[in-house]
Image (cartoon, rainbow, N blue to C red; front, side, top):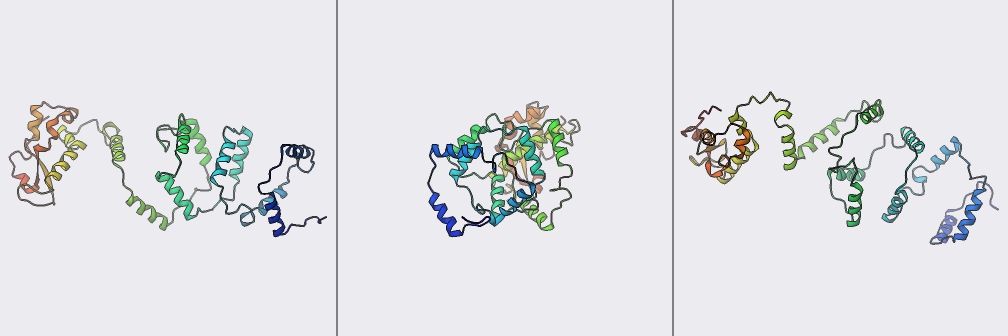
Length: 317
């Protein structure tokens, strides 16, 4: 009989492992093992002391852990997910998990590897994952009715209740992971360069424009901007100017100057169109098709524009 505290050699452990591979206990054997464990004073109801727990934790850290550096296979991940489906933790268990995370020192100061950072970055940027159609459908159905993701993948539109905001505020007070933390000059430079490379999509630009339109703007003063100026500042007017410039290849149609400071001139004057259609609001101007006809525009440089008959004609509306 081996003496107490003796350990198997690496060769013996490998032989035992290979011997058990693919071997499954019969239902009768499993029942015997279960009954035997019920009366085992060394395991049933036995709790480890704090010293034993710490000793066991140290013995399983990093390279000493038999699973160190290993990643579960997709099949194993599916099994783990199926095992947890529908499982709900009790309030006591949730409280234990919360307290355990507060005292967690394993990840304190730990930095993610470059590979992990890239995965997190790709996930944040919304890069499509290589998922099967079944997995995509499962995730879609899972999000149906989810108030935390309602309407957007990044929880857009969802707002915390005042009670939840207060809970989050108290939980983050004195947070040791971020309190007093400052970015290094190198990190600040990386963030600055990353901001230069990011470009808003047309959809994002339109959302930002609508979010600052009219009364929503912090500069709103009750609508005192003159009507003519308000029409010229609309997105439709900008689109009309660009369309005229593009058609004329960004060239003055009088002196043939290319580029520099160009202006889109109304052949039929701005004021005349407003008088003919009796336009008194910006909405009426946006609905007027003649305002945005490209054929009524021509590209001129600033000097040539000043020579036109209807340059800077005043309109009182």
